[in-house]
Amino acid sequence: MRSDELSGDLRSRRRRTIDPKQLALLEESEIGVAYAYSFILTNLDWEAVEVEAWFRMRALVEEKIKDAKLGAALRPLPSGFEAVNRTSMWSAFLALNVSVFLQSLTGADTGPEGRAHGKRLRRELIAVPARVFRRAGRLVVRVAPEHRSGVFADAWAALGAMTSYAGP
Image 1 (cartoon, rainbow, N blue to C red):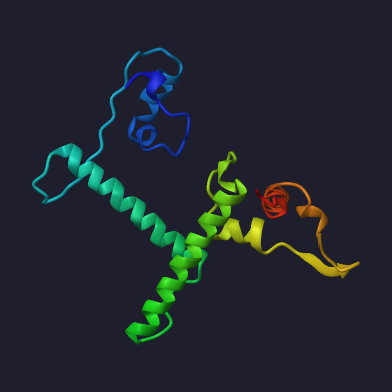
Image 2: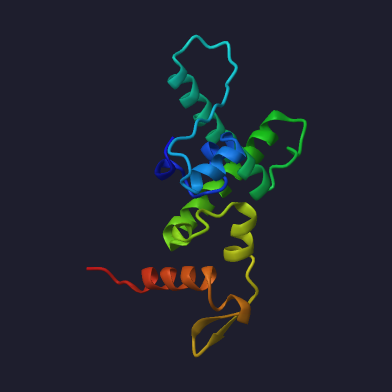
């Protein structure tokens, strides 16, 4: 791998598989190429590229399940009854999809931090202290000062622009 192919993201899998000493030399352009190795032990009789792609997809699914557990209260399923657990699980996945929709709609997922997971979404977009009242027949939302700028303010402005559009 050449230095221009290396991701700047410190969480990158490729960065983590390169020996730290070799990585330092690569970043300082003292060497032109670095080699990294990772292993997947499996009993699948597939080509290596297919196995890696399958494991990457599996990791994406596991990440979604983890996000649903942490972000939408799916920690322990609440009952010994399958139907109740199924309902709880689908509710959590529905909440996860609503959060993804909300972030996409408001543009919150295009920032430098990327898509918010459940905890961050609740903190920045949903659990925002505000006072709601009517003035002259109009609904007024007065947001706490610390949320008048940032992700919530951007989302509020985007939603306001969408609802004020009358269309043709």
